[in-house]
Amino acid sequence: MTPTQASLKNAFRTFALAAAATLLVSGIALKPVLAAGTDSPPPSDDGKKKKKEGSAIEEQERQLAYQKFLHDYRAARTLIVSGDYKAGIAAMHALGHDEHPDVANYIGYANRKLGNYDESKYWYDKALAADANHVRTWSYYGMWHMEQGNRLKAEDFLAKVNTLCGNTTCEEYRELKAVIDGKASY
Image 1 (cartoon, rainbow, N blue to C red):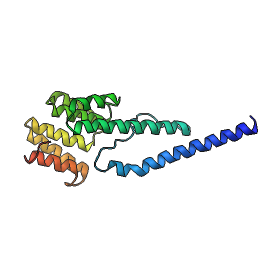
Image 2 (tube, helix red, strand yellow; image 1 turned 180 degrees about the horizontal axis):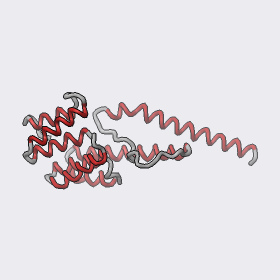
Image 3 (cartoon, rainbow, N blue to C red; image 1 turned 90 degrees about the horizontal axis):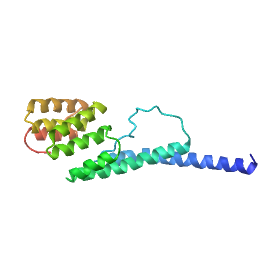
Image 4 (cartoon, one colour; image 1 turned 180 degrees about the vertical axis):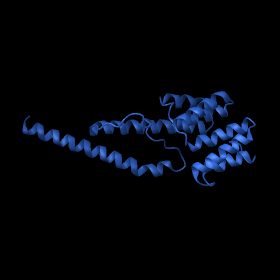
C-alpha cells in the first residue's frame, strides 16, 4: 500500500468513526425529546440478536435503519391515533416488525377500535409475549376487557399498570381508570 493509499484509508476510517459517533450522540441526546408525548420504541432487534462488533459503517447503517423504522412507526401510529385504523394497521405491518411490542400493541388497539375483538386480543397477547411489562398494552388490554363487560379483569389490569408505573399518575393508569369509572372511552 502506498503512503497516499494509507493516508486515504486512515482519513476514511476517521471520518466513518466521527460520523458514527455523531449519529450515536445525536440519537442519545434526542431520545428524551422524542419520547415526550409519543412512543419511541427501542431498536427493533429486541435484543434477540447478539450484538456484533462491527465497523463504523455498519453501525451507521444500523442507526439509519433504526431512524427509518422510527419515522415509519410514528407515521403509522399517527394514522391509528387519528382514526384511520385500517391504513394504520397496514402501515404497522409494512414495518416488518410485527413482533415488536409497540407495533403489536397498536395493531391490537386499531383492531379493537374497529370492533375486531378476537384480532385485537391476539395482538395484545403478542405484545405482552414480546414484553410482559409493556404498560401501554396492559392499559389498552384493560380497556378491551371493559368493552367485553369484564370489569373485574379490567381492574386486575389496572392494578398491573399501577405496579408497572409505580404510581397512579401515569397516563396509562389514568386512562384505564377513567374507562373503568365510566368517565371516558378510549
